[in-house]
Image 1: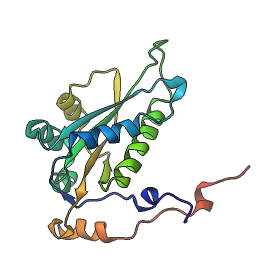
Image 2 (image 1 turned 90 degrees about the horizontal axis):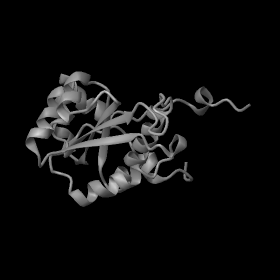
Image 3 (image 1 turned 135 degrees about the horizontal axis):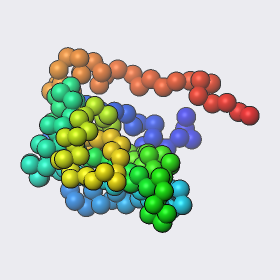
Image 4 (image 1 turned 135 degrees about the vertical axis):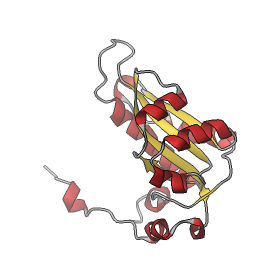
Length: 183
């Protein structure tokens, strides 16, 4: 595994966050990394909505849309990031089949950059889509991807016993033979 970047090897979904806001210059750096991702026809269909802890109203609006189990630990994140993808190509207006794929690639760049800068992240699919859409004023031309908790590592002692156990559990990945077919 020595040939794999450390920021990829070390990345995992954290639940222990330090509740400090993310400096704007760090956010800019993270999203500059994200927008370097490739995309179909260079459409770059991604959009990121950041609710930094500094804006308590925005942070609470996004936090309250999360599933209760996610709220329990995400409330300590430095920022909550909602990801979305433009559903249609800008040049033709036709459906962009690859929009979520491209959003995923931009998100992966964001996650790797965050890890390399000493941040931890946790992707979430557990949220109320209507509430999130209202919280960020997202129009129907976009599909929500996920919500990302972002922050500096925090103390696992602040987690409930179940989440503490999850945080301390080994990172399990399928064996390569289960996901790779060489033709």
